[in-house]
Image (cartoon, rainbow, N blue to C red):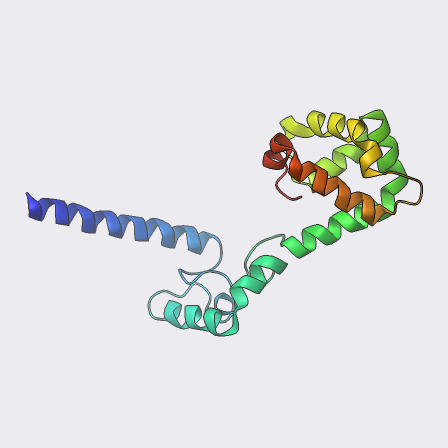
Length: 168
């Protein structure tokens, strides 16, 4: 009986390893993950993944890649997302404020998308924006960047929106 349970554990580990390897190869890198190692060694199997992992660890390229969205790590990194949000707010600030006051509009829909809000939470974000407009934009001197960061902070303090808007 003990041999059977050990055999089952070994088979389970191989199955899990195979699933992880297939997932990593679909992403365009091997078991070592994204980073400089994935760019140099790709998804070559075996010991090459040890070299890829060592390269990633030596140059700390996975952390940078995940944050910036480079080095084969993610399609859109945290830095890029923030820059997109800032650029959109800067270019459309007057229209965003108008939509916030009315609690609806295409610019508010675009903001919800930039914040990664689920489709079901767009209406909640719109009403939240209308209800909290005075604290987000307290006066005419409030810049687009001040409003953006106040807005994101307010959203992060709302339990429902913080869960459904993943890029705030």
